[in-house]
Amino acid sequence: MARPNATNTAATNTAAHEMFDRDQASHAAGIELIDAGDGQATVRMRVTGDMVNGHAMTHGGYVFMLADTAFACACNSHGPVTVAAGADIVFLRPTGTGDVLTAYARERVTSGRSGIYDATVTHDGEVVAEFRGRSRVIDPGRPA
Image (cartoon, rainbow, N blue to C red):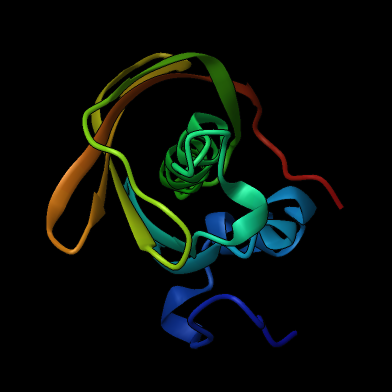
């Protein structure tokens, strides 16, 4: 199946790519999967006028969603179904309509069914936000 929002080569067909293909929320926000595998992932999103708050800044929920999507792709790149057990974000600088945000997530540590992942959100090379997610493997299989 061709991925309209992801790199489409045999080398990148990971469990994270398969999960992202089914991720309707991320697709609706215009999030693109750039790369995923080996406990890391990169995603990006262009901020639209519908994503800004009353201060004309990107709503923090969209920044969180982008980082969370990178986190989800990174922790699902290993194969077992993995979900967020919790997450925190620190917003460092504002962005706005038309800005392209990139989130890079990487695995910090795993132990048993639990993991910790960090994601950095950037715009034009400047750090916009730092995110830390805690993961939990819930099933060794994948949804159909």
